[in-house]
Length: 359
Image (cartoon, rainbow, N blue to C red; front, side, top):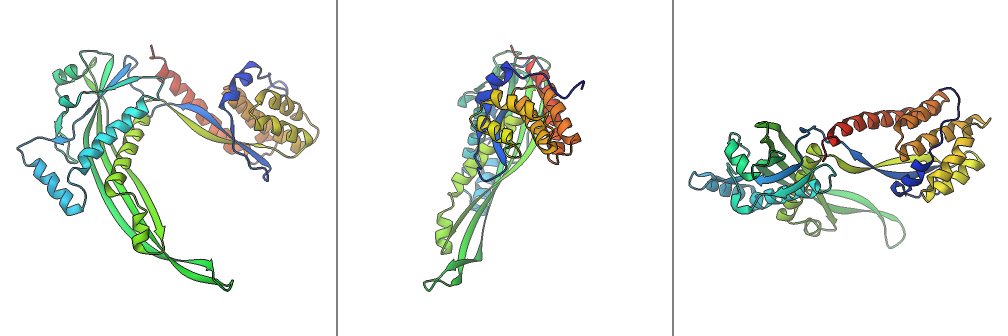
């Protein structure tokens, strides 16, 4: 850089105020804020894909013994007979919900009477024939078919007793047993994304996810009563698994936590009041001046804060420059923040590639 005063953030900061949300911690020397950013999908799908149709292929065919195996499995594991069937529907709904939140694609769900037949278990069938894919997407080569090919869940219930310290009637500390009940749900899914235009499967992914629910009480029965039912836990875990896959194939908005210095000079305190109410323009004006301070600590902290102001404004290159400056001045938090900014820049380039196909 040619000098220590960077270009002003101007209009970008004025527009960015809607993204700041303060989490107040008045006793700390740091202020905390959350920024909403668009995160790229894990996989980049072909640019011609504009829409998704979702379909469920987890129902077993009749007359081949698979339904009897599923019922037997439900009895032996203590799960509901149709628990996985309902949870797979919840899984597809979780995916649908997540895909409605992406700015990149639109989504619909195949009609229930077109539900595809699979094994009903962890095993998958060979990929669908392309004439079936064509029918489900209505012959539209800009629409990809996303199929839940397999779904299976397992529920593990367990408990423990721990000693907790409480104050007794006479004011002395006493040890009291506390019962804790836990329900851990494992969900196994297999997904395929069919691209009719190229007649290729552009993503095939096996996914395992877990969720745990906890309850506590003075007795084991009380602790267990505070757990959701098995079916409810499995349903929630199914929705969660679908949402996870939505992050894999579509850009999604997420919230990221950031911090800034509130103390170290009168100017930092003044700017912190502006940042508290997301007035990043006024805050950055003060921080920019503070970065030229003859006080090394004040200049270092103001430089770090300017990196945040630039990130809020969407100028990642400038944010990286400020973070590098703060690191060179000896700020211990700046290297970690710099890594986050560099990761965001890499993601922004990947996101641009993914969003370029949007029509």
